[in-house]
Length: 60
Image 1 (cartoon, rainbow, N blue to C red):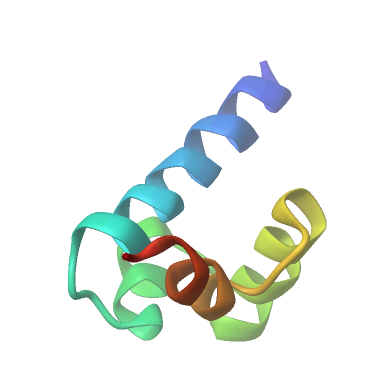
Image 2 (image 1 turned 60 degrees about the vertical axis):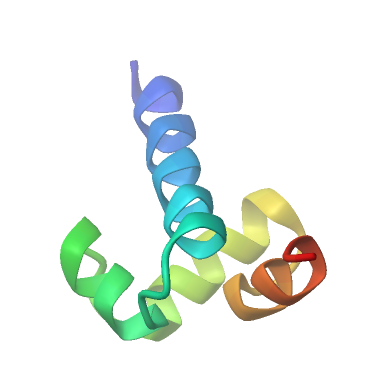
């Protein structure tokens, strides 16, 4: 169950990064992360890059 929640949260973050103009701090607030550092560590652990790099590399 915990793994499902982690994957779901990652998909939500990815979705916001790719399909909205939300700033990282807005995503942090919306999805209940402690702060941007917490989101960065979480995202980097599972996706291998920071949220801002993910956005840059995946937007065409």
